[in-house]
Image 1: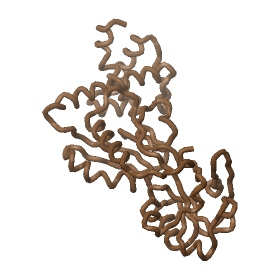
Image 2 (image 1 turned 180 degrees about the vertical axis):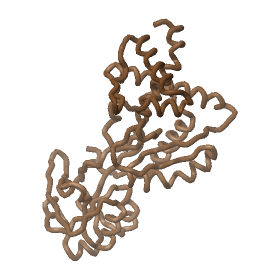
Image 3 (image 1 turned 135 degrees about the vertical axis):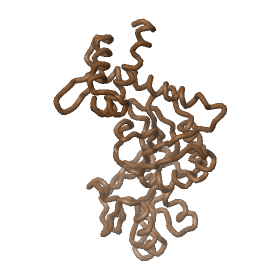
Amino acid sequence: MSTNQSIALLQEMAIFVKVVETGSFSETARQLGNTPSAVSKAISRLERALGTRLLERTTRKLRLSESGKQTYDHCSEMVRAAQAVIEHSGKFNTEPSGTVRISVPKAVGHYLIHPHIPEFLELYPQIDIQLLLEDRFIDFIDDEIDLAIRITNEPPLGLKGRQLIRIDHVLVATAEYLKKNGTPQQPSDLSQHQCIYLGEQVSDSKWKFQKGNKTTSVTVKGRYSANHTGIRLDAALKHMGVASLPYFMARHALNNQALIQVLPDWHFKTYYSGDAWLLYPPTRYLAPKIEVFIQFIAQKLSLEPVLKSEEALA
């Protein structure tokens, strides 16, 4: 396809992206101020020019064909590039502006991201932030988000990312609880203690540990479980048992000795441990509002203390 042909189809490509995002010819037409018939004809022109069917049409919904998925990836990058050109057009004489929507796990958002937002808003008065605190899997298109923070070993397929901070978990209890019930010396000792764990899944009560090349696990029990880190922290401070917590949640209580780390020589391994990554769609064109937020939060989290131990790095 020649450059002239490509330019002639730019509008059809943009309409195609909008149809995929809305899942409807009629909704696309409404948003673009056009008719469903005109939208349908634009898609047909694009399909004829490319020599392939992009959408599988049924009476109820539209579905991308295999070639449609690849075409959508390229067309959506084109649309993002166009949006970036518009946003960059005033880059040198105006401040970054707009709303940045960020999906972030609840505890990470509350205790690591939220404390820095007031400073960011003061630095960039033309940018608004919308934090979506949720632990579920998100879809950048369906959920209409710009960035997502997730704990993962590497960015998922189809996304780019920037590594932010290591998230480790620790076991903690008060000196009063340990004096009354004894201090665990080995992971197996935990079976004799009241353990405060996540409790969302059966596997949450199976705690895994590593020390050098040795790994072990123990099934714990307790009268209290909670899927909220703040509640587990408060329960530990109330001498209710040995609690599992992210290090960033327990750090202040450990530093002022309100809590004591249990089994500090063992690395407590959980599904929720790993590196926190800031994820975004794979495009070479990031809007200024997104660029400045990425740089800001990455710099702030680089200063956050992390768990210092050989086990945590294993």
